Image (cartoon, rainbow, N blue to C red):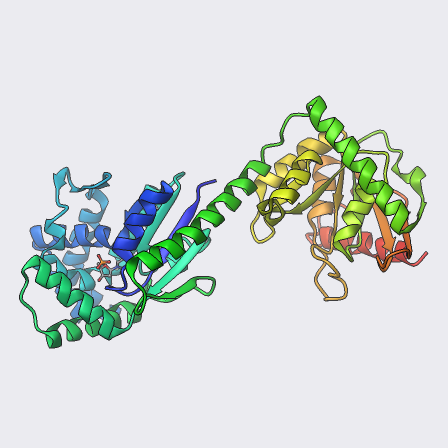
Length: 446
Ligand code: DC
């Protein structure tokens, strides 16, 4: 799985400098998405595309005008054939080095309008996604975290006050020998902000889960260092989660570690709780199966795994693998990670393979701790897997407050044959999941 960082924010917030520094330091591919819009703009200028009439006629009712239709057709043709290529330090448009030309005034003055054309936006978003495919990448732009990669691993929104950005732009212009007055620069920044924020598609907006950074009173180095730390930690965690999807081989060392950890921890359970287990005979199936239990506490999955002679693989949220000690335990016990917010096909594949292999899986259908109390809808995953792998579900009710020296009771119920619930009706899976959960609840009351 590639690692994706999205850096958004208004122009002049320091995105370019900061992103290219982070890309180098963190070994990520750097994608300046503004440059893709700049390339299209340059092409339009070269091909004399009268894109301005689209701006003047944003109302689509006017699209039956012949002239507009011709422009749209020309734009579509250009977008179909445009060849934009980024190398480490150069940008090529149709094979020609345009690294510097796209930063010149002619493009500067037109790019905002061009980037608001629907066809251009769609084509560039597709291109940006394609360029990032299967790569660890950091993208800088306006709509990366909200539109291009709404599932990016890290989202940063860089901001700075208008006054600070005016100061920075004046300094830049002075360095480049460009004449400009403070008033002109201020007007230009406010105009661009407004344009970026009010764009009908892909407007500049902070994603809800983005980290906000105001760079006005910070030096570039301070921001770089802070972001470097944040992204590096997250990258490590993401890579650790990804590696959890590769089940490591069952070496002797792993088996021994599992046995030792199991012995030590189960002894602690027996010291600190009064253990009572019923219905163990329900676990004696000559095939793979799924144990479904209620989830009240982090200690309950461990109780099922540790207080059982059988080898049970639990399915747990992938975030668990972010933390080293838990990731270690996860690997030793072959815990199967799952990304709950996504349709995690990789996880489903591992589960089906394990069940085929006659292994025992553990799942909490509540999906989260105290799900029933929180009124969370019962998850269908266990029933779905049981149906696909043609295995049974063994319900388990855990009854404990998990207070030290209290009673910890686990009651295993009769295996449930999911095949009996299957029918043409789409709702069967939900009904079966509810049934399983009801059985679990009953078992908690014994
Ligand atoms: O970041 P920049 O100044 O090079 O961007 C050039 C233009 O492209 C700017 O007007 C905003 C627009 N843009 C956009 O609409 N969406 C992006 N993801 C990146 C840039």
